[in-house]
Figure 1 (cartoon, helix red, strand yellow):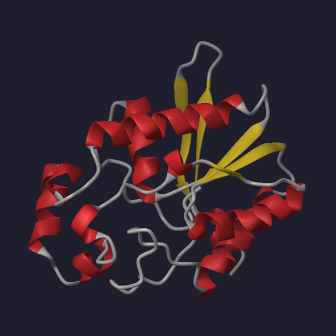
Figure 2: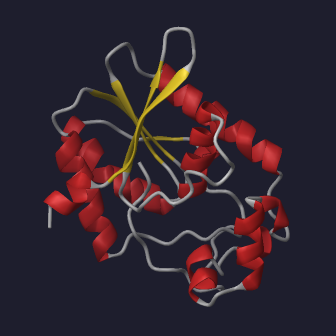
Length: 199
């Protein structure tokens, strides 16, 4: 699940060098809708990143199952170096040419000071595989994380272009199934029907 909507942080509002805003009213509604949708499913565990927006998004899901979310820093959003605090949304709204180049090239490596891209891919896969290990056959493990993390993992399991899955919506659910031989199957992407049903 991608975390719920949040307002952009001020550039001077970084925590430990990271953008770490909480959910806004819309994001809290998205989280509540996901909690209601997943209440009747066999959720075995919930994993979140160390960033507050994932904890706040996971809270209604965790409450519905009596679970304590497990924090894994490897699920944190890609570190955008000099762009932290001046995020993608504001750059997109202003027609920023540097952002346009990043999207045209489908490469985070063009962002000044971005974390090592290969390392990001490795930590993403490591985190999702570790989360999957927490569930048995037929059980659901919920991972509340970030747009680039979702996009990177789905790119890896499908062989798609780098940014093919980057446009996942706040509060959306994507489902992947790990087969007994370790292969992954993408079952659904960017499902927001629970959010629309709650309106």
